[in-house]
Image 1: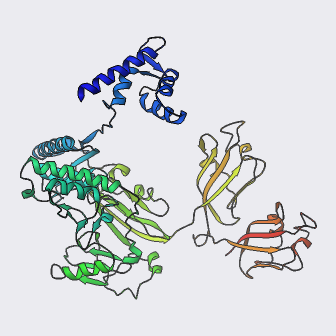
Image 2: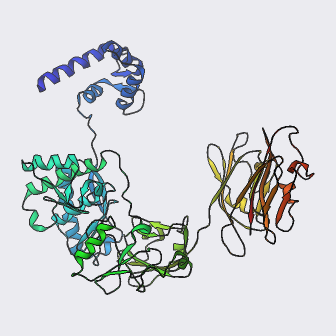
Image 3: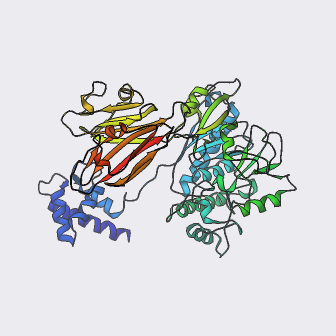
Length: 575
């Protein structure tokens, strides 16, 4: 069969040489197109897709010997870069025996994965004496502590590839029966064992051949079966549509442990944490599993927070979300743990943050700079974002914070010559980001901030005419975009916008006597909307606008389209 394929390949190459008009060893796009037209029914789109894939150099011509080999399969298959690793930051400070053991374990484990499977994963390996055994996540971060060895490395590499860590993993596991439901891995497992047995799995692991314990690895055959199953798991996890597994804390509460205690507590509110239910371990383990099952969580010991403080006892009846703004909270994690501090509808206010190794380091200002849309979220190692004060040393991050009302971010967008009107007179305007351009968006944030006057940025005749902004792309139509917030200067809270809409003859009545009425925008018209903001502002009396008989009768507004039916619309605030 191999001789037939080689002979057929040689004949095709000879045919291509005959078609090579200038005999330079290459086929141009046109030359190859003529050959394929003669070979069969190839349309332009099909030929174009094939040529793009075959033209590895991107120069519009093909070496026809290499092209035929590619078509025949000698090099057509995708070659993945494999499982590989680098040592983590500060490895030069690790104990030599630990470092040598980690290198030996990963060298052997990576070779086994690349021998029996096809993967693409780079691992960052670290030594951390505070880790009881070893752990790893799907981002490729791997930590060795109390266990370092070949079997451990094989097991942890599986976690970096998605075993127990991929967002689809738990969707493929029958949590009650602890069985794997994915068809590809199940088929591979039955092929390996030669029978219709079931493949077991839970929230984090699989068995047999998961190499969860030393006795599971008795030789090369066990390692091969482990890798082939992991490869099948990766295919199962990738297969089909998926819905992220979401554990809505505000619906199921939170499980946690306090310093120095084996008891697991549950708080109905994850915002105002209280010891609503207690499970003394190990006697209360079955009650704990039953409680988790009711709340839709796997019956294991995952998703348990480690508190750095001791919350009060409560039944949740005494708590409500208003407590958030008065109570201080604490968050604690290690070097590579995910930092996720936040709460729906609230913004994090960092009081104090420390990053402690052999010494204590104040990182409060750096952590405050990480707050985005009211939340702090860092994956892959906090030190990557704020720097590493003690490379190679295991550290702990601690943060004390409280919640504040989240201020709504707003967006204003307009063209070159449009009027820019952002903010509210008398309120606090904060420009988060401003850009201006077409092919590339120039950052003009500082320039726009300089234009704020009395809580407002108001420009007519073209934003590019303003010296603080300028014209980043002269002669080109551009878009100006601002992201900003508006808050009450007395309370610091978001300014609540309201809308009033009516017809030509309806009574206009909005605002509140004794309050401050602020008109953001007012328009009036039919086929076109005329800006009447300034006119309506002049009608304010004692925090209110009240007009009867038709808004068009007011000289401050007028009638922009006489005889036509129109709509009057106002956006305003009352404070």
